[in-house]
Length: 64
Image (cartoon, rainbow, N blue to C red; front, side):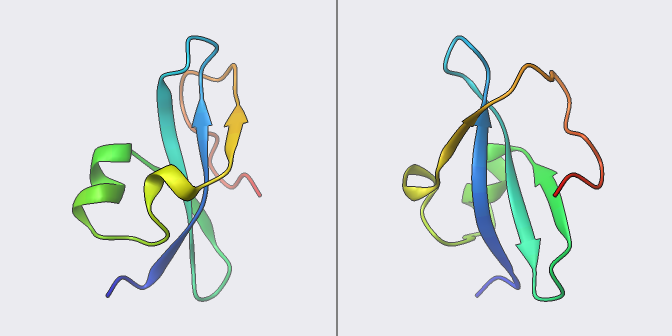
């Protein structure tokens, strides 16, 4: 079981998932690649996360 929880997936205008935002037990958020989210078994399922549009090509550190 992962110590992280999925918060949202951020997608570009073309619908591609740019990254997934996760939160640890202390409330700190970070962005990771969707493939890493899946391989680490973080819940909820990637398809159940809310989708948020982003124009940023790269994650913004400390966002949230």
